[in-house]
Length: 100
Image (cartoon, rainbow, N blue to C red):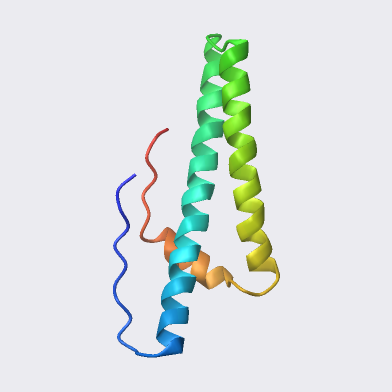
């Protein structure tokens, strides 16, 4: 995945630092969601092609479970008010998915 460039916040002090931190954490959530979608797409393609082995399914299942834990953590931050939907949508504008 290409590195994400974040424009520096011009404000100084705690508020500027907080806003920058929130943006970065929102990007992390979006990256996890995109990666999770890539894992599922890979699994679906393998199953539909008939080329999936038990090892493939276990590996994808393990990666998917790890991503689910991370997504649940960030989603919890969204639902408890630490993140806004706007922050997540703004992050989507700057990230382009890359096949896994």
